[in-house]
Picture 1 (spheres, one colour):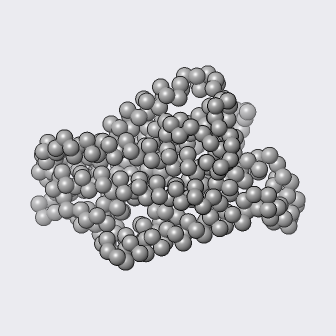
Picture 2 (picture 1 turned 30 degrees about the horizontal axis):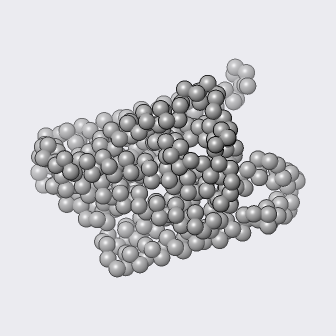
Length: 356
């Protein structure tokens, strides 16, 4: 532990201050979005919320709940080549992480690491490689979709062709590269590369247990069926989020083409993942900024001064928040968080360890 006044303690204090300031900025940005949504110019859109049918609201709630399950299934699928955990447990962990993602200090990541390490006995370094592998699938799947959507601004045959081709090429390249470094042969290649680097430090590091645990990430991304399954689930999640925006737009009477709904949904999700200060405000403000940048029609201020996209995005956030709070409560009960906090439940014997 660092003594008072040491650089380590100073960095932690600076980090805490930065997190607090960033979280406050997100809250302020969310407050601005709320004030714009509640402005007199947007009363017409706000009034239409009361006209929403029970089916529309239930559909948005169901799609929000499905997103928690699908994202949990993505984590489970990516890990399958090296470890077999219970799918329900991984979904519960994802529900807890999704709820904590509203808060700063990346508590969602901390919760994911603590639960899977203490409860399931997954090594810390392997969990890090696992999270990076899931991020890799996210980039190779949504990257092409976002790119072709910004370019085409319409769902047509070319959009489908380029989108599918882009995903296949990007994910295929990732699997090939990961396969080159996976397994015993891949480890030998990594050792050879590390041995050629100066000082010998890298060569020694490449032969440690932690490096071997991190090397599991290559096995995850080198498994074609696991990556294909995770990519398909990621596309399903993106479609579900786009559907939520489309339903909200229908309720509010806002014209929102399907391509724009895809762009809004994907941006909204990615910003929530990458925001270092919690996703409150970052998703809403960032999505509004992106919509204005790429020229989404719903982001433009109407002749009467109304800004319907503010209401639309906050409506999606509000419905999702109800589900995420309920999901977080379910996860705490399912995972017996009280036992985890007392340090129990580590390395459970029923946590599968076998490779695919």
